[in-house]
Image 1 (cartoon, rainbow, N blue to C red):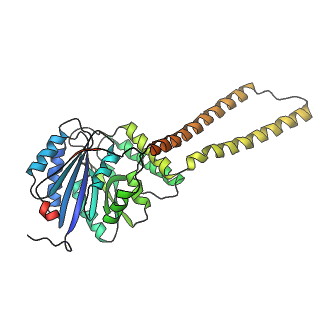
Image 2 (cartoon, rainbow, N blue to C red; image 1 turned 30 degrees about the vertical axis):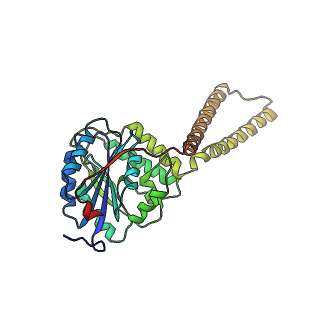
Image 3 (cartoon, rainbow, N blue to C red; image 1 turned 60 degrees about the vertical axis):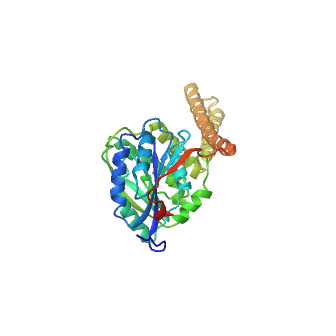
Length: 326
């Protein structure tokens, strides 16, 4: 069958993989079923983020067996993190549209047609937002809402609540990500929302993981949240100034009160416990301010090192679909 470049678009699907040997085959079968029913020439990009299980073996078998879609396998030298894996896939994509998603089936492939339909309405960015969670991590949803509310308060930008790393972007957004927003500390789902392109959102239910456990630890989530807060707002740096002004007002009021007592009562009011507690509180605030400043300084240090976002160990491409895609 002859494919016309002007009539049939190319879709790139970037899939981040980290120790997903137990869910990868199920995910691939479900993704195949979805892609078979859309009028796109499809490029599937598996990015192995330093898996230490049999994930790469499964990806290799997919490459050998697949004869319909173009499948790429990008293996990184070690685990650079989920954000870096997505960037690696984006850098090596060639589609008119691109979808990023995870391979654990909590990002349901059956939502892809809805995302494409939303793009056809003229939106360059389609953000998938968590609706219900059927796994055991209900707390994660509420912490995510708290995080986004805080981010919207201290940032000049407005971010969609419960946004995820499951999203669709147009070719011009991809082109920008390939050349810009190359920080060592990244928040990709935030970048695509602040570019100014038209954006829409869809919701999806987070299914219970069919196999395996989540690889995104609480520590990683906290690190990502700190990265986002410091990447999109300087407000925390002004925290010390605001607290200092408040303390100055209290200090002036306390000084006036003490002076008036001394003038009219000829005595200085006792307050040893109050002074000790006040000093302890002041030092606690001071250390918080120093810690916030250290986070920003650390980010500046990492950016100045200019280390690569990721290093590729190998790239393999399936024979299937090459002629159609290229």
